Length: 73
Image (tube, rainbow, N blue to C red; front, side, top):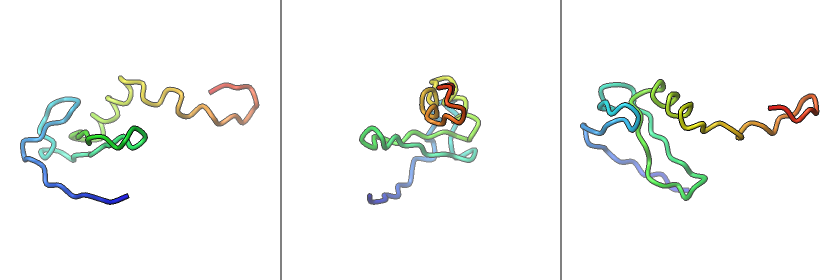
């Protein structure tokens, strides 16, 4: 997999809160399980966390661990 470095527009906004990402601590997220589509930018970890919670992005992703054999997540 190759790496590409891009310089983004200084007015790039957070996909969650629409604040300018470079006014904060920006985070770039790319879904590489689905063809590594376009990156999404969040202005900080709080917006990324809120987006994950609201979209239920962790639901079903961590249910493989089964220490007691009771099929409970």
